[in-house]
Length: 351
Image 1 (cartoon, rainbow, N blue to C red):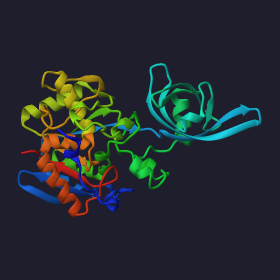
Image 2 (image 1 turned 180 degrees about the vertical axis):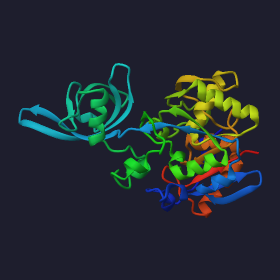
Image 3 (image 1 turned 60 degrees about the horizontal axis):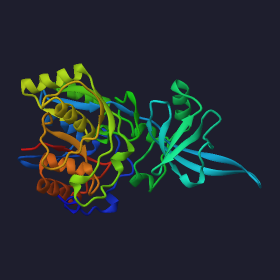
Image 4 (image 1 turned 45 degrees about the horizontal axis):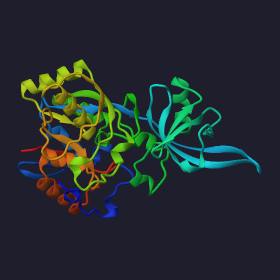
């Protein structure tokens, strides 16, 4: 299975840098056994059935991109260098794994000042990344980060414009609860409170799970034989109540529809570890889903349109088939669907 099998041409103008307003007015490409239907997200009220269950990732994106200055006392006086920091993952000892630009300009033991309330000390460098120890923790850290941090927009958006205050709202789901993600579960960005209420009235049930999306979701696949690719790991949790609700829906014949690839990866991880049945689960998952994968829980998937040659494109190809996904993406390009994190959505229902 070659990396080139998952490539496609995408016009640059189809890459969305802002979401549509309101969220639920985005286009929705429905792909099922009958073919394609061009719809909008609000049509989910008619497309979903009473007794279906949406699985929603309730992770909350932290403002993980920071801009500060590294001060150094030198022979010619105190000099400063501007530094860009992207937080990746907290560690058990309270330090943070991070990316720093430019990493070569800072030494272990030196500080980066982000504000009068927030500074960090570089404790180690390894494999192009850094470990940072901050001057505060808990609520004080959260407050200081909220004051100066920027939303960590994906590279293909950040290359076109900086994050701004509007992204604090746009790049967060309406049900976000558990802080820890440095990237949004973007299919979920299409839902607003009004649509959720209409779905509940329809009889569609909802279950929250947590998967803290990491920056590794944007890492490119660098091997031609995709089966040798090593996935990044992400922390997730499915509570006992969530697992029981999903199992009950399956038993009654309802469809389990994760909203986003993150929710799908989590429930399939738990089912794999449970011998094929969904179970409560907590831990780190590095599950890699590509064609040939056996789905134990997922009946359909709502997701955005993904990067060429990405692991997420491989995941949807596993669900729908490579040939079918190529047709779906060709239709999306021809009909000018908006791509990636702030783009339009698809509802994928395998035969």
